[in-house]
Length: 310
Image (tube, rainbow, N blue to C red):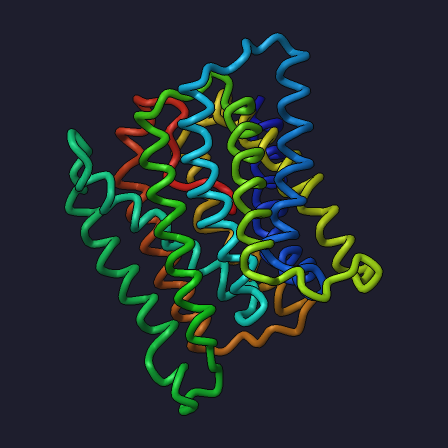
């Protein structure tokens, strides 16, 4: 069993850590919201057909409403904004910014009625984490005085993506959701895909777009996101939830950004500076501190993890 757990966990590290680079390749020639809509529409249909054939009961109207709210927050607000931002910001930096989600989760969990207040370890992790983010995106990165400059709107979009992802995750904890996590995921994907298509059409990003202009690298990136990022990743994730300790599961929250940073450097020639490495160490270390403070509670509540895949 231990071998199977570690095999699935390593696969999750590689697959979800690599999705940021796949997104960057996909949005090179496919509009960002439109590409995300295609990804989640196809993945959602496959998951829903699979779970219905497996005997999952038909979802209720209340469950459709709840999964629609979660899907829009996570997939339009979270994934859609990440895809849009990756037109302007390196994939490794995007992964580091999204790794802030556990910080927002701790804050929102503390603010919601009957929520769990952060421990002293969680508070320290929050302070360290936001310090790392400040180091990563300090003002000099926007005014031209830094060797590594970040696009302002892209960075704001990534901050909003992590925030909206966390809000959706917190809402899902008390919402009326299907018992099958994979069925719920498929429903969220369908609702998120519809919202992504609406935003894509409304924003005008399809003006002048033609499928004939899509590069092979973008098609491969999209295919990878559908098959590995959405399907293989979620299946591995669901299996691990049932078979692996939550403390071990939560490690992907700080391993995935490392994978993303180095894959971006290796395959997309994204720069890695000393500042990025130091900030990455601080942010990932803070996530480790936050998660370690939550693990004792999480072990008693199977199925709860600090962050999910973007």
